[in-house]
Structure formats: structure tokens, C-alpha cells
Length: 515
Ligand code: XMP
Image 1 (cartoon, rainbow, N blue to C red):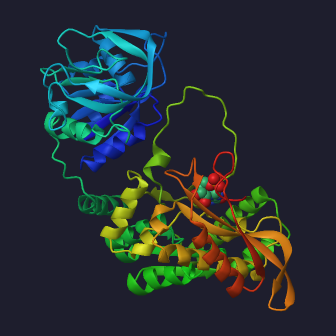
Image 2 (cartoon, helix red, strand yellow; image 1 turned 180 degrees about the vertical axis):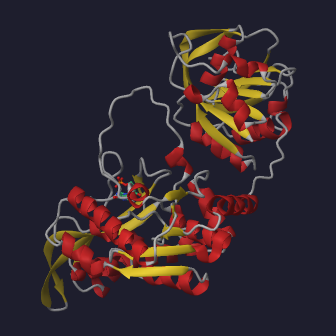
């Protein structure tokens, strides 16, 4: 396993992604929590020091524990990681007037180096991605120059005896095409990791862990049909069988066919003990007079918890609550700005439940990124469309009918339009290229002409975005013929909609959902 010490770079998570793609388990720990003792306890075979926004020259800027360099472990410093390593080992870093941002060419001109095995030989030039203000101006004793760039005389350096390496560029980003191979060289050839961390291995390891944690206790799991909770349920069922009960609180805000799929997959196919609670009436009653998005979210969240708790009691309670917490939720981020961040939308989850119900948590996905969860889902035999599903917000369709009270009728109208849209996207083979696609029912009626008569019905908006993490997004550039075909089908097949528009807002300044 590899330890990644985080100095607060925006792209530290990508280092972890690349290392895991190379089949090696790794974790990210914030620099201010890392000590020689904590490293010993984690027991890595190698360490990567990430980039970060600070300047080594600034008073009090972050450092690696000095003792790390005496532990005999191979170390790779990236950008700020390289700079602090140089400074701590007796080299020199200066605030640069040679700022380099973006693409740069790297001259592999110096010593042969295992990092560049199979990538570049002496005299070759390769493209890398740089983002730095400071730069190393003198390397520590024992180091040799491996490569240079216009703005960085020490773009790659090595002390092969100690197995210390430093690069000024960012091998973890896609704009450094050789980066994947370089990181793989580090973890395999230099550190000597086997590269056998696969989903098959993870599945077996996690099942053993769950069994050890839970013993003969009883576990309850909230199932929504989303990727994360589905994978948790399937994994736990394999680990502990009937000690697991799943509770599916059906809010009535699911997309077409989804409630049925949850029941047929988990109860009928996996034979999991499943409580399916149709609470749609209760949710609709509570939301009947509300249009404010935040109030809706709050009521939905609170009602969800009430119903869940009641159902859990009805099956006799449990000792553990299983949750689909993922690795990006647990990585402690390193913050240099400190200021309070503004709540744009409060995301609905079951926070507070374990305390309220006095249960311990089982979180078997805590170490995984989203695409690793998908791979695990496939490994466990979940249906491909469930595993590959677009993200879907907890409050569901309730936040896709802005500006008007929710009723069964308008939910049905929206569900039909949404399902035609998704159906066409799947048929066109575009589903996996899109992060999220959905219809929104607008609170305006417009005039149309159908046959010989006048219509006066709702308008609907279609949304589709590309994104990597939901934090920023761009609208998907469908061709007009495709959008026309979808609009035609919706207007012809969905009674209640007579006009369709396409949303071309990016995030920021928009958000992905309309509320
Ligand atoms: P926004 O609309 O904030 O959405 O750009 C970013 C991502 O978060 C999802 N989203 C939610 N997920 N509860 C959730 O579980 C919510 O209340 C919620 N609101 C937005 C949204 O679908 C997108 O994937």
C-alpha cells in the first residue's frame, strides 16, 4: 500500500485514482495528521507527497515530518511535494518569476531513471502539465537531475540510492500523457508493489471485515435503488445473509420503473429480506402546499427519517446501520482559506439517524471511489443498468417540479416525459457519455395547436450535462435532430405537455438541478 500525504492540491484525489488503477491500494492523509508514528501504523511501502497551494518560502508553510526521510521508504514528491522535500533535505526553493501554468515540454536530458522506464530515453522530449510559481533552484546532496523544462531546471530529480524522486509537473492529470505510466513505474518498479488490488480481492477482504465487525449482530440498510446503497446491500447480504434487513422507503418521487426494479432485484433475485414501504401518500400530504426548494428538502429529509425509523422498529430494530459512504466523503480536505462556505443547496441524507437510533455504522464502501463502487457492483452481479445509473438526488422528482404544488398527476406527467427522454438517450447510445439527464416540469402553461384544436398545457425542459464530479458541469451538445425527435415523442405521447425546451446552462453559474 501507498500513503499519499496531502498538501492541499486540487488534484490530490487523482493521484489516488492513478495508483489504484495500477492495482495498488492507497490512502490520502492530510499533512497535518501525518507523523512518523502514524506512518508506521499505516505501514505503507512507499509515500507520495502531493502538490499544494502554499509556498515553501512562506513562514509556517506545511512540511513532511522530517523523520519520514529516515524511514527507508521510497518517496515521490510532486510539485509542492518536490519543493518541500528539497528544502527539507538541504536544497533550495525560490519564489519564481518563471511561473509555469499549463502545457510544457520536458527534456529528458540527465541521468537514466526508473521513473521514466518505457516512457522516454535520454534526449527525448515529452509533454507534461505544470502549475507552479516557486521552483527548486538547488537540489539536495545525493540528488541528480533527470529532466528539465524551460521554467524548471529541476523538473525531475532522483536520488536512486535512497529511492527519493521529485517531479515539478503533475503526473496525475490527463494533460500529462506519460503520467499514468510514470506513477505505475513508481509504485511497481521503484516501490515494488505487486499490483494485485482488484475488485475481486476487495470483495473478499471486505466481506471478511464485515463479518468480523458485525458478528452475530443485526444490520439494517436503507435501500434506494441508487448505485451506492444497492452495492452495500448486495455485499452485506453475501457477508451476513439474513442478519441483514433492507428498508426501501418509497417516497413516490422515483423515476418510472425504479421502485419495481428495487423489489424485483433485491427481494426476488437476491432473496434479501426487504421491507418495501410505500409512503408516497404521506410525502405528498406533507409537501402539498410547499414550493420553496429548501423547505421541500427539509421536509423530505425529516419524513424519510421518521418513516425509516418506524419501519426499523417494526422489524425489531438492529445493532448496526449500513451506509453507502464513499471515499470522497471521508477524505479530510486540507483547507487554507478557512472561511465558511455558503450553502447552495442542502443535500438530503440520513444524517443523525445512527445517533438517534443508537446504532453503530457499517460502511463497506468507505475506501472506494464512485467508479470503483460500480466495478464492485458488477463483480457482485448487480444488473448493468442499476450499476451504471446516472446520479439521482435523494428528494427525486420532487425537486424537478419547481414553482407548483406536487400532485400525483404532475408527478406522472413528469415521469412519462423523463422516461421517453432517457429511453431515446439509451437508444442513441449516449447514456454513458452523459453525467446526468432528466426532464423538468415547468410551472407554465402555454398555447399550442394539436390537430384542429387549441391546447393549453405544461411546458417541460430537458437537461443533460457532462461532469466529472457534479461540482462543475456543461450542457450536453445533442444534435438538433435528436432533440427534435425527443420533443416530438414527448408532445405526442404525454398528455399534459405541449412544449419542450432544452436547457443550455452550465454550472456555474447554474446548478445541475433546477431547485
Ligand atoms: P446541483 O443541482 O447542486 O447538483 O448542481 C449537484 C449534484 O447533486 C445532486 N443533488 C442532490 N442529491 N440530495 C441529493 O442526494 C439533494 O437534495 C440534491 N440536490 C442536488 C444533483 O442531482 C447532482 O448530481
